[in-house]
Length: 91
Image: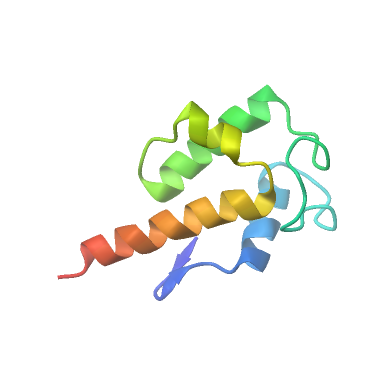
């Protein structure tokens, strides 16, 4: 999900989230709330935590997961750590 220059765009990220969770792509917008708009349940939160751990290559705390309320929040977490990982990998 990372291009050579860094993380994918938020638009592409919303498509990936919609596909992964089999949601209507029109409903998965940056402002969409995970619980109220997309009806995430505890299993979906667990899945997105594992997905973020894979993408960001670091463990996601319960406190952090509780703070991620919108698709944009999830994207910003992903993008921030992808950029940090890319910077750490540079010689």
